[in-house]
Image (cartoon, rainbow, N blue to C red):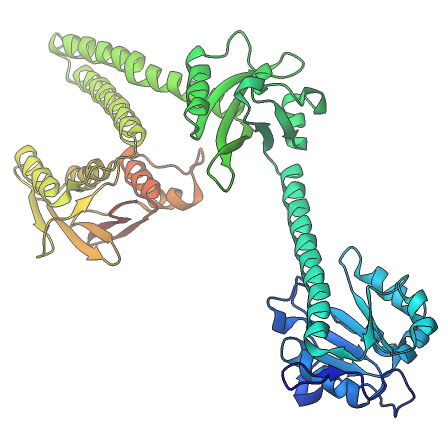
Length: 510
């Protein structure tokens, strides 16, 4: 019955009294003990471990050789070795009788993963351990058995083991993700994509409840219960259109808490698709931005007052001061009126600077490139016309045009060059504008002058922030700093007795 292609195991009498050996730590051919992966799931058949807990006889050698072609093999005759790591344990009758309850304890330790045990019984020994074995083992193999049948039965058990480990890992990952959502510092909700059922909520986290006051009682409802009388119809429509188009959307919306309190909510909604691309759910993220919206409104009002009301009042003061100045002969009074006019003009200049900063930084991001080379040439020509006594020079790279999409860069460079001219009291101020490429895809712009330098307190506030005692008098410097910061670049000022160098280094396409 034996053949070269499918040999028979068990002819040497597995389960009988053979010589015994201690823990070997490896199988025939040098197979080593298993060092499990961090997640406990073998990555291939070769990583799975079969533990042969049986006497050291010819059958064990043959089993180790056959199983070693597909799996890693451990061998031992000592029942205490059952505490080691393995993916399937094959026992002979003697070992089965010796391990007793230890086998149950080892299986409990592996729970909820499946850990198979296989009992080998000799021909004619069915009435000894075999009938009772099925209560504790997953398969009973009667010897002799052909090699192919043995491998098939062991492989089926190991495949069940691998499937259970993968399932355990998947469940653990899902629990981790759910815990992360539960404990996230932003509101999160999940709605089922069911047009006929009005996209009902199926999940919401703790922060959602803390933010809105609504808990599990709203599950099954559409999230529009957060809306109220003052919620913008335009914003509602934007959300509906995005959901209908199955695309993400982010809006600032006025919502209502469970107690009727209004709050500004930054809501981001995104579709969740299955493996076929079908939208099955929508996930929503909510953040309370009430303070930010109030601050934005406050800044809008303050900017309007500064740019319009204050400017109009200063124009009025300046006009009357000039009118009175022309009708007074007393030189001292004329000087006083000149101070009033100059101060009013300075304040008007501040309002214009505030407007310039606001307009520049409020400009939306752009994907349209502009030729920085042409723009810098225009800036220099314009400043030469405005300040004919100043020398404004320009150095550019020798290669092709420099395309950029940096918001406000032209305004920032103009501010740097014009400040260098205006704050230089010399008869013939000198300013040099230099542009260099910085790989990869960065540019450096330097504005170098021969003026008196910028006071330390003007530059220190860029790092330490402004205080009532330490502040910058030049809004233009803040404008340059903010333009560079918005682009994610580097802004630096090097000032001394010989002049000042302002450096703006930015990516060409932020």
